[in-house]
Image (cartoon, helix red, strand yellow):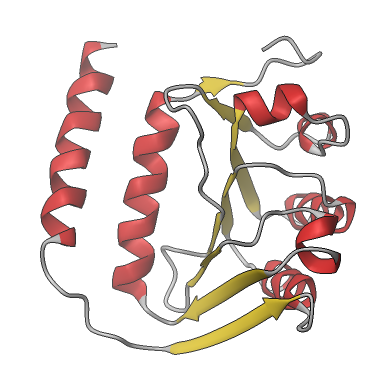
Length: 184
């Protein structure tokens, strides 16, 4: 336990020091604004293109379509891991988190913050052509069909992907494992 705390503290210092310097823009940017653009389609195409790993950080996750896409990726050998806000999971009747867990996808619950409000997906972040997905877009049906949201897919910027992955791992280090059967 002590080693994990030390590791998290060191990781936090590394991430904090990286943020102090501007990051060169590389790669491409795809942007979608809902409800007009097909943000969900862009996200589904990115998930389908994953080769090695997908790291998810969600505030709320109710999209059946995206849940199915992550399960499909997991079944084809992509390592999928999810962090989600424990309070939103407890409040949500339509959460896809239990479905992901049943499919064998590891899920961790963020409990440290009043709201773990991140909405990111890191696709192959340690590979030569990573994708960082971010924006206000929640992983829900409403985000596409009813809400005014934005989604950015930032491709081919390995340094940016590493910074996001370090932050994801820092959050993962503070999270609790979702227990099978829904005990949280």
